[in-house]
Length: 262
Image (cartoon, rainbow, N blue to C red):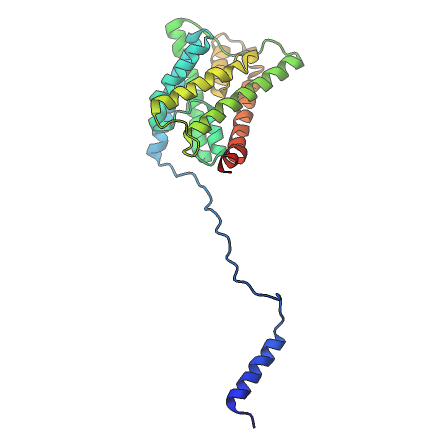
């Protein structure tokens, strides 16, 4: 006769034999903790209104400065400094659709907020061109000197590469992991200096590096002089900077940051 205890042990042994073994050795494996997905902070209607107002004003100031500078790299950088200084506490001081797009690619702002930035920047560029005409009597916009394929390719590459360098400098300065200075004045000067040098990489196209300026100033000039041919090549100043900004965001997050962490 088996005792109750022996009978219980035999039943447990039979169960173990019947149960299939999927691993020779069982380990307690901890599932890796995946980092939380980065999401842009939601913006209230009031936040978006402030962004719209100040981004319009800042981009308008920069557009006026581009017209008033008569092509001077130093004056253009100085006007960018003033525009960022005026708006950075409220909007981050983008004043450039390519910069806003790079932060959208970086998951810093949402698609809806990006639309607000772009609308304000285009409106600001057209408004700045109009104010420049009222004060200075000057109407001007970026232009492509030749439609020759080699010339157009050089303009596309120059705008894309110049914007890439400019936006990369911005990412390095604004992110805590790579920030060069915590002083706001010095940080804005760093970005203005980045624009100065980035324009030297795209002198073939005039160094626009800003779709709002390329499209907005051309729209105003085409309307004011009643010449729609001014808009024939606006796509160069629209798509090349956006592509350069996208690549800058990818390069910063996929290559620059990982190399620093090694």
